[in-house]
Image (tube, rainbow, N blue to C red; front, side):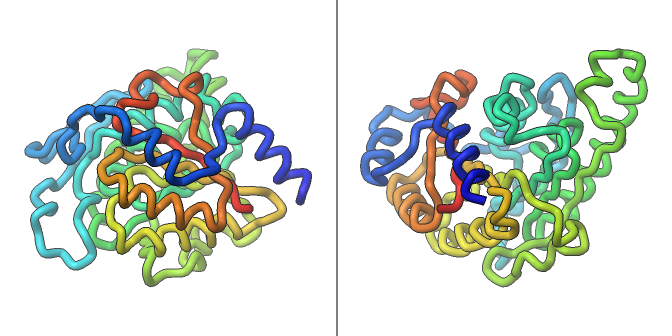
Length: 290
């Protein structure tokens, strides 16, 4: 197990810079004049968004009106946020650092926390990994499942239409496996995943995209990340955290809590597209359990 952990950290050292001081990291990221992206929604008014990621077109139904509802479970997952297509495009790129280091591969199992109604990252990676499990609260599950069904059908049609292309065959899977599971960080344990994921199946990557915004949910979020990454300690699970930078206080609190159990790195700009580099208003970190 120690050699597996060492291999993982060596890979991360090669593509990212380890964060050793929370205050220094917070200052480094928030000292820039961050571009104004408002709340960070792609479109605050439309109920249907058409967006292209990695050469594929997705039709995403959203419900931005829920952002002002009184839903007790929270409603931020009801819309498409700007960082999601950026991360989806980056992860789907064959030159992505997680792919070139072998952390993300064709047999990989990926779990995303707080995916929202779009499922966009899972849809974009569905051709490139064995299993992608999307999770969120009950309030967003119906729209999430509709978006998965609609876009997987389209992806399968496109895949079949281009099956004659040898290049396409080399980079795509025959069966696109994307599933949606209800998971509440505050009340659920990871056993709710057992029906979708056999207990002996390891998790290669846990994705957390734009979920760091509510200081009351930081502890439950990190606790859930810890549980998932502890599921198979003999094979380290990598945690990917991407976020829009909004509050330095919330960011610092999150990083402080995360660092208790995880070693944390921030991706070097050399391994990020221009849209995600330092100063863009977004930050992309990766972590592994200590």
